[in-house]
Image (tube, rainbow, N blue to C red; front, top):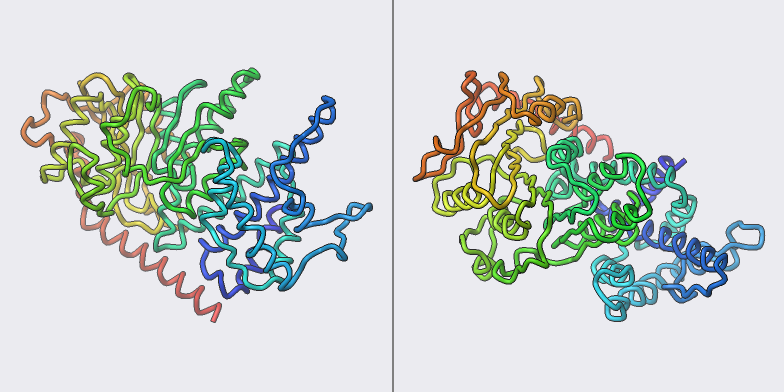
Length: 484
């Protein structure tokens, strides 16, 4: 039922002149999903308060509750068409009254960690792009069919929402920055092994995949106490996100995974001066796939000891600084980080190797990230002691990865297994820190078993990747022609 409702919503959005991409579809369904979720949450809390003989104070005033403006019901529990807004009346109410009212919560909230503040942030950052009030009414009716009450319902909805985020990642252009393949995230989490009570942080959280998958990992560990569940809900998952659309999606994604009041802040992480980070600001675990290829302004670079315009290199400095002593990190970065000869790259490798134990490097094949040809590695490290030995693993699924043939959990099973003991294999080997060149700190080591260098691809692999990309382009063009 839920899957069909999502398909129906997208079908209506495709008719909208204001919604032209998968990013628009996800954004517009997200704010409506959020308000529907909030209505269910308020009703549950009101019922609990009544059972306890207490009065419940609603977050939203009555005219702005879902049950009032979006889906008023008659005594028979069915939609009351006489009280239902539609057409221009609905559009004008949403744009002229609902959004300004909800945005005002940002000023009225007691702090950024409250759900009131999140409401204000979300509705200050996005706009209603559904120009037809009749289309909006049709979408609302589909959203109203959804239920968020049981864990089973939330679980199904979270899977459907993840699929929407994945489609955004496959949409090309800047959609991919919101989506890190979930099998890769799950493997990173299995290596870092977060535990109940750890403060887990992603300073470039995108759609909050690392935080959501960490929650799933920890809640699937067996019986949890009430104290454990409260800790999971309120004091474990922290994120920052610069872009407004990603921020909204992160909030909704965490809610659907079962985290009711996500600790995600809408901010530019790199605008924070590293010198201002104190012990109270630090985290036990950092899990992240920061954006790379960006060029940060000189005033942003001033916040970092190692000055560089490369966004990912600034994030890596931030992550090292913000980890507690003994804290663990799993961070995706462009593989040229291992061998670049510019001063910033050399200095950053030196910083990482001397301040952290870089124990594992996972080399990911081309095609791991849909719509992005950049090759990446994952750095696994612990802060507080220098690197002694690095274990490298070259991931090779034995096939060309692409949109129709993505990375899966089985592809990473051997890596996760061998990493536990840092075992040597045809795909893995170790490097002693004493063998690293102290002048360049170059880490682009050749596989002793005769594999390729981590940084360089063979001509055959490059040609195979080009062929795979050509096939995907032909498929996309075919889909476009079919729509015309």
